[in-house]
Image 1 (tube, helix red, strand yellow):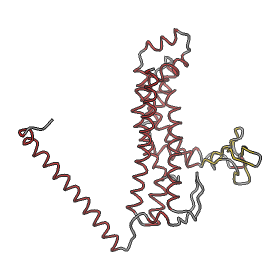
Image 2 (tube, helix red, strand yellow; image 1 turned 90 degrees about the vertical axis):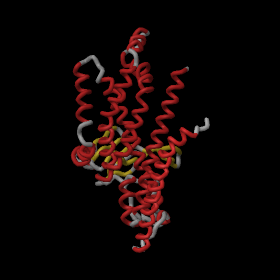
Image 3 (cartoon, one colour; image 1 turned 120 degrees about the vertical axis):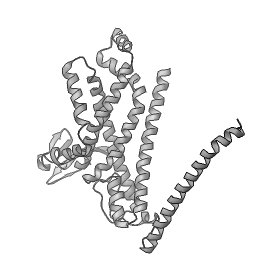
Image 4 (cartoon, rainbow, N blue to C red; image 1 turned 45 degrees about the vertical axis):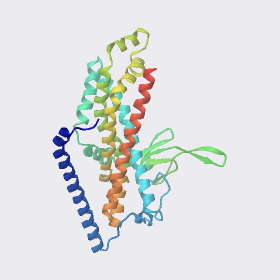
Length: 330
């Protein structure tokens, strides 16, 4: 509908004010950028992202893809991003697996179970996350035995060097299982999860599980009591009724706020730099920035990568929520 002249005259000062504010912000941003580029030229510091094709010249402790001193900075950025995605995925999965039973436990009829789950939530969500990460890294994992006295669970080894898992690989005779083996002061073979990754995963998972448990508890309480009674009437046990009837309906309301908590988890993973885990902040915002002195470009990469990860989480949760709604509508 066309806007009348009277309405236009009434709104025109507001439009003019918004346009003026936008112009001032644009001018300030342009002036700041121009001043920054001028200072770079005065100091003879290169600008742009051409440095990404330069040889990095350093090693990374954990590399999901091949990486060496001859690799480029761009490949270092890729390794750091994969390491961040790994710790976010592991922490989110472990945190969810902890949060769901804690949420049901807070609603249990048994006072002991209810009290234990309440204590879990109240204790871990009120201890600073960085302190929890330090506890796991400097205390719990550091007290594990050395390589020679590794704790063995089948083909899995656990020691103060990390957690070592079997790995599938293609051999001469086909698909084979490569088991980790303790040799002197090192472990050969298998997949190594470094102490930094273990400490960061445990800290993030336990801390965020307390918040996720409250989100899932709210979703569970939103399911009508008649659903549980109907499940019991057809012979389902309490556990099966909770998993097959109550939880799918609770997730419909719990997933949107849970997405925000998963995004908070992803942003909090930048604390990895405090214990030396090679993530985006440590490699891109630390090592690459200090070696190239291109602070603007390095921090722009850090911001872009974290924003992309958070948008990816939001997309994944939205897709899961839509699929859940479609299944419940059938």
